[in-house]
Image 1 (spheres, rainbow, N blue to C red):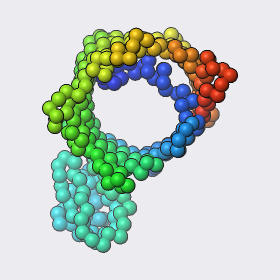
Image 2 (tube, helix red, strand yellow):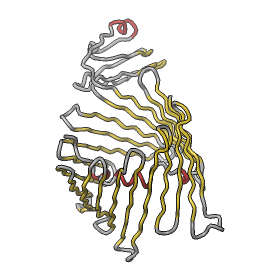
Image 3 (tube, rainbow, N blue to C red):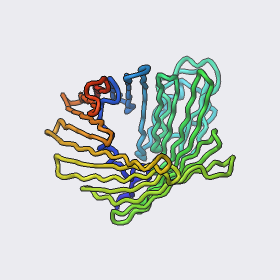
Image 4 (cartoon, rainbow, N blue to C red):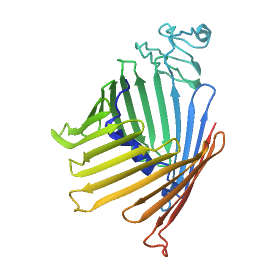
Length: 346
């Protein structure tokens, strides 16, 4: 029996139908995905907003799935000097430096470099223990690093360490996230180690399609609860319905998703903010798969904003997305938006 959805994904089917693959939100969007022979995947993104600067990011990700195999590296010793004998479970190291210090930390077996006169490192150590390393550099000059250890410390437990560094302002960030999945529970904990520190927790219990979830936030320094939310849902592959109360139980939303058949999907969402007034926001959307390589989407909300989208796989690895939004109450004004998206994957 699979684990229930995370708290933020309780209404994922309806939210994806209403928000995903609508390309009018940016004037142009370019994404290039590639995979190197050593398993490192690269993802380059660029987005041109209708107003403001162009944003982009460069992401590199490596997943080292545990194999249980050991690859000795006796050829390395003539080129480097070790203070400790190399661990035989090191997977692969190729470097050119005059001094290397090795610290065998079980079970991760990290390698730490220290010394002087480093000419270059061709490929840094790969721990064979189920680690995933993701590094991102954005046009905001932000260096983000994420280290994941999934289903290794304990069954169903995933740990993430996230760091952020902004060289221009010398700003630093560090977070620790924990995800725990079992057949009837999905619990998460998010810790901001440098700000506050703060902690956010959520948990979802599931049984035969019924889901009940809660979320809470806590500021350690202030010793105060910062937020709380709750949600209930019923989810099946063909349809799902969810009711959430967020923002300290002041923002309510009800969503519904229905997979009518293999070609047609439909969904709707209603929201009410008790702090703003009695107005209820409503949005409906539908998706129609034209053929195995293309689909079209449409949605409209209570303010008369309509959006259309078209996605087509031009050839293996090349996807084109086109979108437009129209203010049906101001058709004679320049309140409309169009956008395009290209995705290349190799």
